[in-house]
Image (cartoon, rainbow, N blue to C red; front, side, top):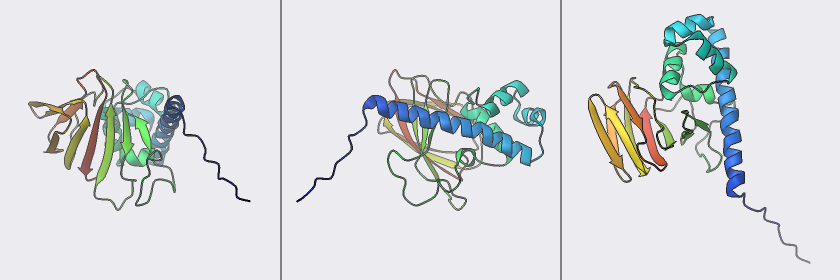
Length: 208
């Protein structure tokens, strides 16, 4: 007598969104705790980190407790002050390593107040020379300020519109366009359109 193997039903769109939101909330909570832990390990008081980052002590306190979501620019300032990477602050021990990163299992987290998300394509590892992410930008979402750091970046617009500012130049890109620039040049980005934008973004060395 043969028995059929029961295949579990695929999650609905609502269930998928709920699962994604739960993962993002967990990641945001982990971020604040990891920032506080690393700050404590380095012997920094909250006011000292605030002075290094150039933000208020109140804002950093909210970030550490998970009450506030830092922008990409604030995160870059924090990791520079703590001598780490954004990926390391989100990492979970024993989980974020390996050659393959399966769809639906990659770490993802919210990166701005508009609800934009960043999904890691390359599992963080100290030995990696590259860093790859999928940016899914909400309308109006983006870096919320200029960034500048050592390295080089290349990106491909999968869908939607993408505004990239490098130095004094402003570029409007559409699906199928790509870009490359030195990361030391002050740069910023945003989604100027009315629909969501997806960008595959690769940089070296890992800083996110």
